[in-house]
Length: 133
Image 1 (cartoon, one colour):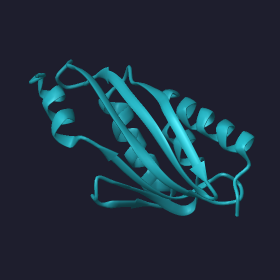
Image 2 (cartoon, one colour):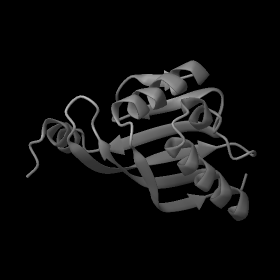
Image 3 (cartoon, helix red, strand yellow):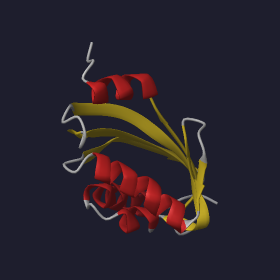
Image 4 (cartoon, one colour):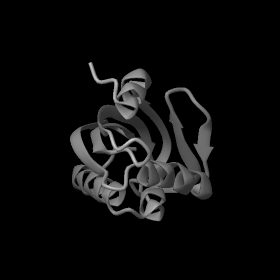
């Protein structure tokens, strides 16, 4: 299957908007039923409720979070979505700016069937703690 470029571009725009909405259900709407994400080789977050919990956790930790779409690439039904998260951590008040990407497999409706998410955990944790280099 080959993705439609316009549909893919629109999906990445609405995915970014969903992350900035404060509503984790909007993020989950971009995943196919019973599919999900694994972040930094951690625990698999599969199924709608798990996606809502994962997105909701980030949204709660960063009430002023702004996610930007840095770049996107796709080939066939595979894609890469590069992003930057910026916001103040709820508990520490420290500004965090972390970049990463998600490797996606997509279905014919441009819904994510599998996502591998990546970001620098050590850098992220140091910024949360205020130990910026």
